[in-house]
Amino acid sequence: KRPLTRRQVAYALDDVRYLPELHRALEEMARERGREGWLLEEMARYDDPTLYLDPDPREQYRRIKGRGKLSSEQMAALRELAAWREEEAQRRNLPRFWILRDEALLAVAQGLPRTVAALRKVEGISEKEVERHGRALVRCVKAALELPPEEWPRRRERRSPLGRKTLGAQVDFAMAYLKGKCSAEGIDVALVATRA
Image 1 (cartoon, helix red, strand yellow):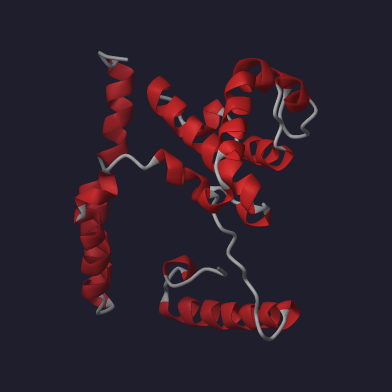
Image 2 (cartoon, rainbow, N blue to C red):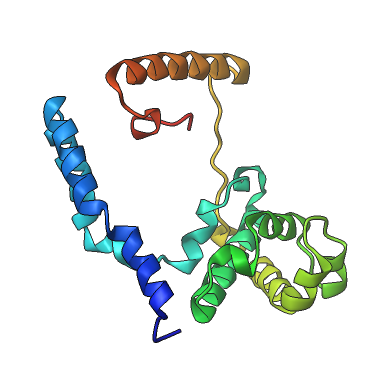
């Protein structure tokens, strides 16, 4: 809400007050280590205007952890549910998780309730959330189920020819090696790779 209070303005200023000094310190560290090119490459990403566009609500389901365990039908429901939440969050100018947590969206997508009464039986969603959003959630599930199956998102099969245990052991070994190398070079592992 506008206008911002003095306290809100001070809070916002504190978010950026030290950034120029921090920028100079990071540049100096990069220069000392011969990594100016890395810093320039990383910062160039933020020059892309598409980075700042509002996300497509129908793609938000891809950000929800645990979706890989869902069937295509359930993933279609999750896509509709996540799109509804994103639009609701934008409309109300609230963080998306204040509308409904990811875990609740997953629970509804797994249960595929077609009525509010069925939604009440889904573990992982509270009665308060059902009261507040029940009809909208059921509408999302129904909309997903009315789509032809060829319009449902496809599950990505993750099969290793070596088997799950062998692949897991190889990933563990690779991550340990990576952590050692990154530690020796003073680089955060997350900047190089993740388990995925």
